Length: 77
Image (tube, rainbow, N blue to C red; front, side):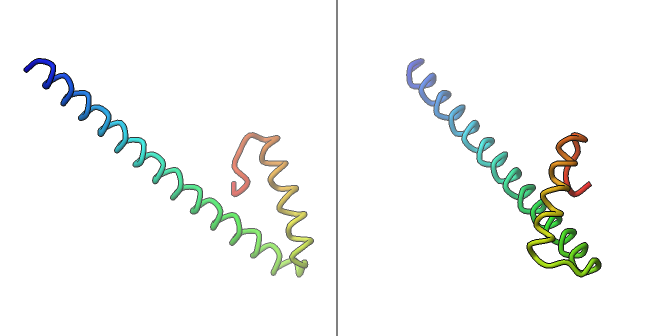
């Protein structure tokens, strides 16, 4: 009886960990999509206002990402 209880408790713990992990992954994926969308929209606005080509905008974006990395902030900030 105790062995069955211990096995069941083990299953519940594994399920909870699995559910928590999936929830965390879902949240991280959602945040990544939000970041990418925000980044692309911001970079596209800069491209339109400055009348730059896609390639030029990509270089600007690369510079922004490096600057953000150096400043230890996100590139959308």
